Image (tube, rainbow, N blue to C red; front, side):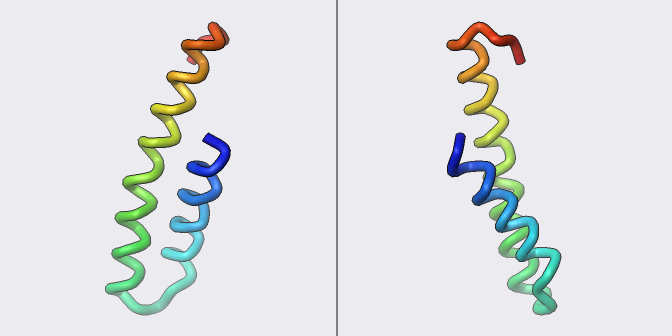
Length: 53
C-alpha cells in the first residue's frame, strides 16, 4: 500500500503536466490501473486489521 499510492499519484500528476497527448493517455491509463490496486489493498488491510473499510 505504501508504494501503490505514491505511484498512482505520480502517474496522475505526470498525466496533468505532460503536453503530448499520447504520453498523457499512457499515464492516465496507468493511474486508472493503480487506483483500484490501492483501494483493494486498503480494503484487505482494513479487513485483516478489523478497522472497517
